[in-house]
Image (cartoon, rainbow, N blue to C red; front, side, top):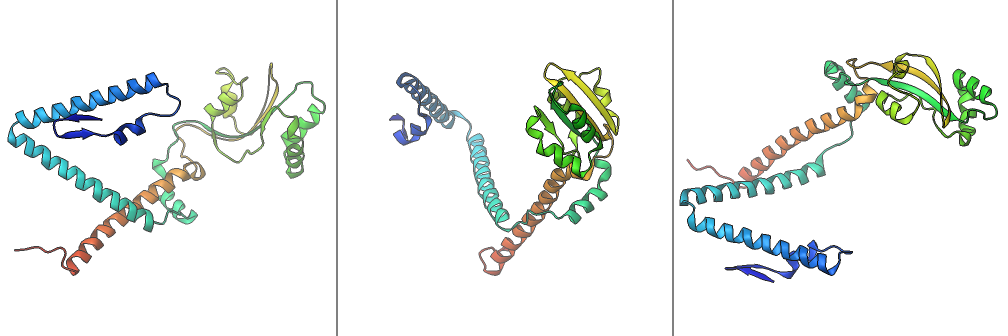
Length: 255
């Protein structure tokens, strides 16, 4: 396909470059550009080997060998870790980590728990829906769930923390002017726009710089705990590999 001195570029080296759907002209241009870049790089490498100082070339070879060894070692360790690590984090373990590092988990945004319904302003039974929505006892929630097909949009799960900014994006009539209403706990809000009537109930609020609740930062805690476990496992694996190599005499130190 192409050759620079004693280095060859073969057909199967470039086949993966051409994706289906490309025109013949585009495919040809893509391949030619790749071949020219490849040739330029090979010529530059050849020029470097002929003209750079020997000490610099030796230093490059050392760096290349070091990088190659690190790639092999890291890939093997990753495979061993993936095979042996326990990626489940119990509630007890997560809570222990949270309590020990609680001061670290500060919110950089406002959070709220809320429920909302978007419904036609002149829909039948709006008053009854609003009554059930505000009271929100078990029977009320079941009934609202059963008629949810009437709603343009809704969320009745008010036990989950969400970012206030996400709520602002989701509910159009919330603006910079009335956004502060979202930050009042146990607060009922009724808003209107061209899409209809919005019933909003704020169940709980956590302001910026408050301590983040464990349920909100649990995914982060799980990642931290698993990563810590991974680092400890890597140390153990490295120690065991060296110990086994010493035992079977594939690793020896000569004095």
